[in-house]
Length: 534
Image (cartoon, rainbow, N blue to C red; front, side, top):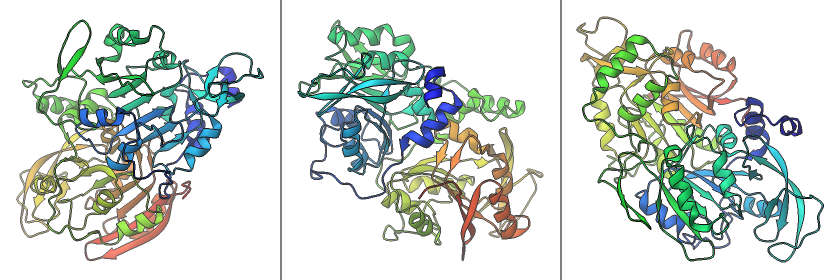
């Protein structure tokens, strides 16, 4: 790390990203919370309540809490984590306070470092005070009595925020709480606003040069940052302002002193709110056909935008509408094994491909309902997808198929009464399917990596793959060096060569065989990434 500091490597340097990911960021705790006052639902000074209200009580969001302190008293994110199923990263520079933070067993990543106002990493002098602490560029060994009456200088590693987000494979942030004792302007200046999507922010202003000139800063940067001020001062211990990402689909009016946000009556979600206004006259199907014909690359920006804006549906905010809500785990054993192996981890992210109607035999419903996970449910069959939507799952949904190619394409799909199947043959061919009858329909297929990029989510805790014989093509299409998939269950009864061949295939990709599940509606192996520390 010292060599990278000395070289002043760029924020997106691959070695820097790897070292942050592997040696600095700590994983979310799987232990019960160790809170001093668990009865306090919202320990913030009003920030959490306001953010929660503006975002319509969105579940499953992602936060960055910089100046997280001990993770409980005055925390702006604890409520969102405990009661809205959010996760994120808690960044605290003070080494002593960080140790206290770790005892709270927060369900978010943690990092003992500081955010740096430069585009490269560096070690700085930090006044380790009994309460807040502060970064200084001056003499490291200087004796100093700090904000709380006493303090000492220590070395602290600093990183650009963008580097940290890249290490997490998470460049979309729903809420950023920034309280860094006077370094706020430098941190904001260091952010490449064209490469990140930060939806809402609270920023301490009492140490900002000029105080409320932070409002002017946002206006001056509006073309880059696309923020508007919600002029909401908190006259409490920690003064701050809240900012809302100005999407073109939001309408506002302003006076000389404040701006009022007027939100149209459309549902807001964690990912589906857009930076651009949809053109109601835009023929997205014809545009998608052009992308198919061009066989654009998996990471093509137009393709990613198309998937995000026109294909992925948002998590439901309505109550579940299950046929059998009393059944906690409707899977055939996959969920129980995954849950046990991952030590009942909370707040994870899943991909459920072959999700069917989202309840019967679902490998992810238990994780969503009882472990506060979210993810994406992918179901190809249009009729079954309608049933899936009726269940009001708290995950993204996509009526599409995973493609075994590095580009999007339309395929022929046998819409059967139960499972269905993708075919490359004659679209109009008459066929009586798996359930006794069926018809062919056109279905849009995407590479998995394109879908993950559309979600800004390249880390997956559990991938359930059941695509009726297309498993090998899907797995072949995955750029394994660009995604981090922790655990997988894969149907093996249609794999060429059967279970042993599939096990060998996954071992070559860095996964170890854990078990297999054989039941009425399951013939799966479960594998775990071999470098995972459980």
